[in-house]
Length: 243
Image 1: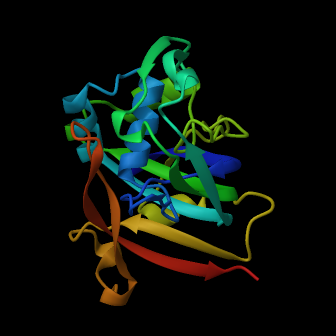
Image 2: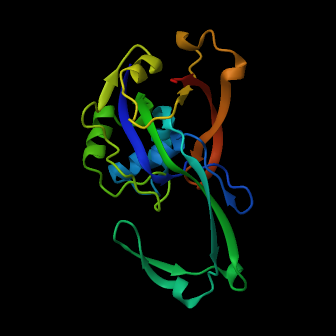
Image 3: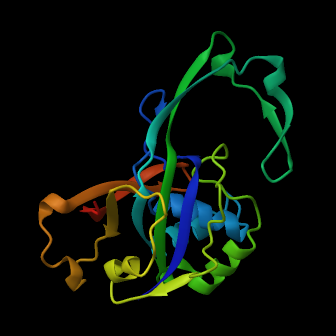
């Protein structure tokens, strides 16, 4: 198998999960929906290109290694959308004018929202694609070399502290996810215990002996037209003690 290599590191990052009341939690590793959004942004796609986004998500396979798991961080946000300064025009991260008209349901009082992040985390991520994705690894590599727009680690307040693209080893080839990761060095300040998340393919002999205890369900599929989480995929997770 051949996979694209990404290095995710920054002061903060967030991997979207289903919202719970006023809380916007983060997963403990990036999934297919997050990587779909990141790669589509690098390609210059628009949020309204629902079919292309759905195809890319369906064709992506993502494996993650938490070189540094990071520290959970909660950010309390307070806002009153009825304030005049929140109406009118603003700017997007692409430098385009964006109109805003406030929110009728928040004309009185203050709206509270809790956003959750991982601080000082570092991940090594492998991405493969099937023909269903509508693109190739080489096209994704070129997009990461010269992204059409600024790239973020989950949210626009989470810029990376280093290029996401690995110029030394942009792609890696191996017999399995594990052998591919074995050829990729850890970040210098990695944790003593490093955790992995690998996508499950029932036909892959690598998972033949895995117990149900090591299988998890990850909320990493998005309904792009509805702008909401749609479903889960199966992953196997395990930790390696390097101490």
